[in-house]
Length: 284
Image: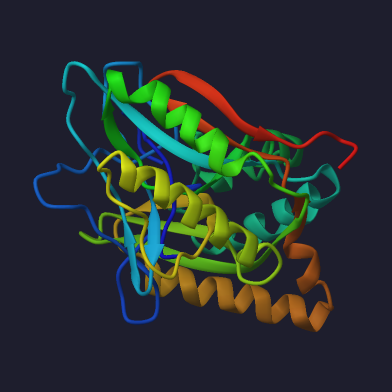
């Protein structure tokens, strides 16, 4: 999936991407105006539809922005992701190494340069890695108020029988948006959990289709974004990431710079309200 997901607020900043032959591209659809750079404040207040949805498909990652229309609400279906505490220290170490060589990086959803946050390891772990990330299961799109109840009801019906599985975030990837105004550092799901997420996307697509909404992109690439930079720095950032990973291989610590977490449920945000679509108990 060439994608990231997210609705952005008014300030520059996941996780919900890019354009180059080697890395995915964010493309905004015709007639839509891209928003200013993130943080990811998922969806704006009820009647405000300024949102972005990082989606990757094939070689294309897309930012979606749409204007405010009275009576419309921004819809986003996603898997909430929290980084496990034991993984935060190692991920923070990776981000610290990368940001020391690429000072233009900012933390997603935090309006501060990453290298400033890296001066205090505790702040880095809490401010950057302590937030909730999201894997998108559908595009972020506007829906009408009369569609809300049926949308939530049908999503719950289609996704009510989910089982526990593990999600492996094991590949660092660099994405840029289509107009080369933003670059993102992300962790992608390439093995564990990919098949299950693909099935969930298929179910969400079915509900979207019944509501005459655009389906998700083909060959989805689920991921979360941890940092962003203004402009197209994909080439230099990719080189930095490769060098850091290469160095970690020598140190035999590369596997520490990824993480695994349980799938615990699916949520749907419509306007400012969040609906639980399915939730797994701790017993699962």
